[in-house]
Length: 333
Image (cartoon, rainbow, N blue to C red; front, side):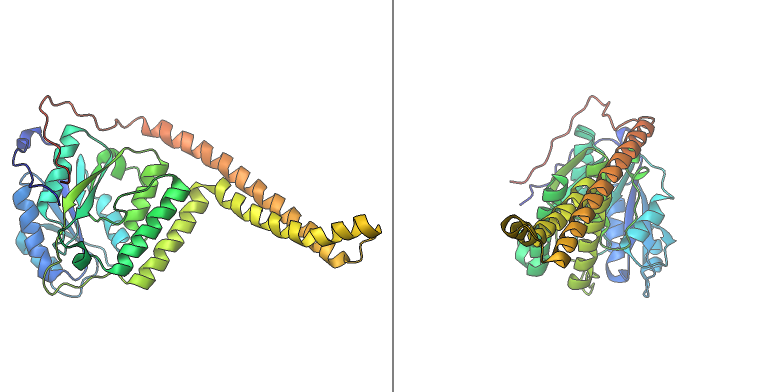
């Protein structure tokens, strides 16, 4: 359980400029309370709601609550966030959901930790008294599997891979591409941060039930398959040597298995009667070598682009805390 949020907050003049980003799809029932809660918690911040093609009164409700509203008609959370980030020019962006499941106190924790020890991306680890009620079993199982895959492939295991409460520095959100479309957004942001060596911090934050009458847009099977596909694509794109090396090893194993019989036959009889099997084995081994060479070439090309990316990134200073005041870090009890 997350301890009570400390009431000591920095004066507005000491805080960097901030945008509260709230992507919404049919969240008329909850967006008013969310906008009001975050506006009260961060009076110096701009509140930006992205209406992602809602069919109810989400946009009108958000405007009435005092938020600036833009529209992205192409459905998908990632598309909505990408559209919003292109319009933002503040030092920090605090992204949250429009269903009311992330209290503003969680956002305060992220801001406080940023002021204490800045990083490029902060992720709120969802903590709730009754986690079994808020997290469906299939979702918990899926999150564990995806986190394990991420650790295996990218050597990083997040504590809450799909958390929707995140804080971005300007350096991060202006230099990380968003290429996914929907709920793959959070995993893409995490992998981009890991691959591009951005600093990350994870902090426990409170989590609660969504607004009454609001329905989850997450479809377990459909979105799970999309996330799995994204993992494979990112594995291919950001770890090409490991990806194609694994395929090459499988092909080599098949080639050795197919070629073992003709080889044994040749040493025993001095002849190869299973010529088609020998040709198949040679072809598969040749394909294995070609695939491994593709992986090597792509890895070399990726290294070149990484070096160029990081040289360009040096033009933008990493977040450094200059204030003399320090604020308590709130951790899980």
